[in-house]
Length: 348
Length: 267
Image 1 (cartoon, rainbow over the protein chains, first blue to last red):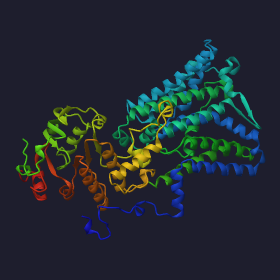
Image 2 (cartoon, rainbow over the protein chains, first blue to last red; image 1 turned 90 degrees about the vertical axis):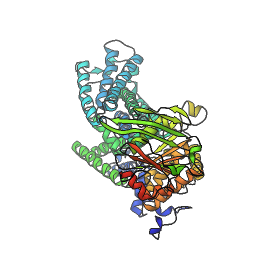
Image 3 (tube, rainbow over the protein chains, first blue to last red; image 1 turned 90 degrees about the horizontal axis):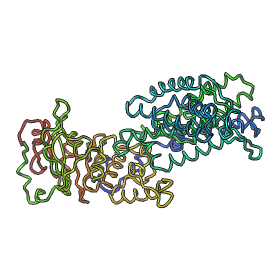
Image 4 (cartoon, each protein chain N blue to C red; image 1 turned 30 degrees about the horizontal axis):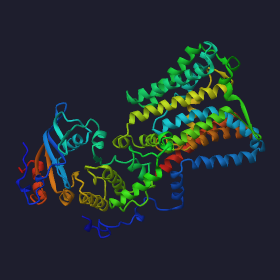
């Protein structure tokens, strides 16, 4: 059949490949290919520019205590965003992650303060609360085959209600809790920079998850499931098992996030963190992880969380009203998703 | 109701050998719809068996039953003479039957080597692999490379390129290579050229010939008559859920095959 077109080389033998790559190499497409290959590149560039710009506007921005404050502010959202990254990599979304974390934090605080359970079993109880929340979401997504958006919209409300019912709306102060439960708020000084145990916990989680996603078969399967569910299934991957495990691992991470939250606020409050659900999604999206699944890295999410923290701090030090911070974050989200759409055109 | 053409009794008759894969009187119904109505099929070592038929003739149902994607209601499957039954695609795969599906075969964001090893990743030796579950990325890349050159697939030079950066023919080559590299006994290709251009189709056809050269039997499902007559040793024609005939490119012409397929002629 190939004889009909004169340019077509014979089917056998060496075929030249150089011409078969999709992209004409214009400078713009080259940039796009780099961004496509390294999903954390665009948030890294944004973060560096933002730090330089805000430092130029107000030199106090670059003071070590301001930078360490940003890190501390990012610890809770950063941890939750890690759980969120896992779910979004599978082309899902978790609207309930913040509510589940608050539920876990109330479980930890309440069994400790009201039931007199020691610190370690209390943390384990919180871990089980997180796992249960993840298992419920995972069950609904894999067994009832409901879309993650709807499932977690439902469980968001369920977790909020359970938290208020269980805690009777009462906040538990950090002074009523054993030291181990609030240790995540304990400052550690490295030179001039003061970070907290919670920040260290968050960073350690990122290292662990970066390894798991990048270097293990499970991590590769998470990407494959988010990339193309059917192709993953046909390659012999148990899609439901991967999805379930993603929600369970997310449950473990959000339970650790609950511990970080108790230390950060030095309290466990059922009314805390209403914004955390959406803030975690914001960090993931700004961090360059695709909402369509299969593309992104956890370091991008950390950068995304830091970008939000840097914008909030930088704009307030620039003397702008808090509403402008929210405005800026909104613009950032739109820009990040647009950039992602553009990058994904490499595929077509 | 299985009519086998008399012309297959040639000098190099494959029927003198034992079939590698054999299906006997497979029946599969979907509610009231009869997908397969007692279909038998034999695949012999080192041959390309094409399965053709009109839409709804039961081609894909037959293939799904052979590869574990569907469970037949009745009938038996034999692999190298031993009875087998597949509940999931994974069962067929572990027995050495690899399938390439027409467009859902690869994971676009993963690179070539990761795709070849998707679902059967290899871990590092020692503590790194057993405790820390670390993948042997380097080793898998090296083996992917040597496997590709062994299969004579020259279109994939760099195994670290994400599959989404490849052309359609190259993607199909990845899928076929995966099947050929791990399919120790049978490779099944479902419409491998349906989405491809002329040149890319030729690459895939060449790949099929190469597989046969290596003695690996291939089942090819295709709509494309010229391609089927080009590469197939024998052609199984499905019609209305039954095997209407099994012919060879030498015994029948393309027109004959279409006539049998559409019911205009008996085999």
